[in-house]
Image (tube, rainbow, N blue to C red):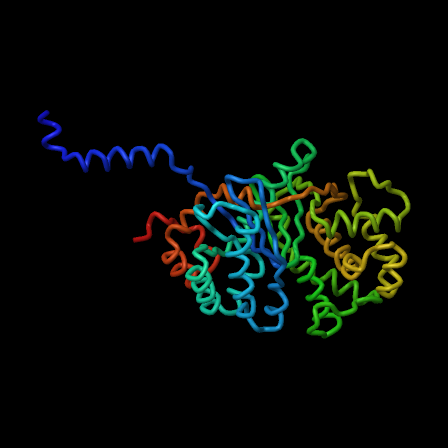
Length: 363
């Protein structure tokens, strides 16, 4: 009776009610947005559903316009994709951005930080710019999850639109040379064209020497970073659906079921199509235009990777890879989501490396 007098009935009822809510509350969930160079994809920890929309982030950057034109479609994606996928509105939300946003920071750090702040204020999604090594770790974790025992090499090669990653369990090398960005580099250096989709073919012997020299320079630190005995599995479509079937057809000695693609065969295939027009190449290898446009530059890119690592061949295994599971399990990313103002202040100074600082040191 004494306890009841010192603990009013309404307060007891409130305490019991809060205890009931805690016991029956929806489990904490996470929602992640993968903001790549060509679109946004969403997923959540408590649902298998995903949704995706295409947004071109690279073209305005290459034109020197920054990412301002992408603000509205990105905000719409962050708001609407969870609704399309019927994901819970109560989840903690983080967006991981990658090569295009790293380029945006290099071009205009303050403008990029301001745009990120506007997106978060409008959508309540913390937008983080991930370092290259973190992106590589995501790619390797995804490959391990999807390929399982089929992944027998030390590293995976993932070629995106704006960058490539060579990712292993302990070492990662990344470079802003994806399918589209490498093609744009060749357009600038060989054709003196600001148009990223310029016609590269036919390429002369001098063109090939210059292209290979550019790659050797870009990849000069690769072997030291990755270490000795690096072996590779290519997992992305520029290789699995573009380079690999074309090389097998052109050298007429590898079956479609062959797992390995040799460096010698890639170089031979380059020699067979370099002097042809783009249209003739597409006809010869029966490639869809989406792959034929980039076929020669993709071959040169793959050849350059193998030359830099000293590899004699590369395994080719396609899988439907997604970094969303890795992003969803990234505690650091979600800790930054809870300290987003602090993250932005550090991002203004150190850019993507702000991720590596400690959220616990924020006031």
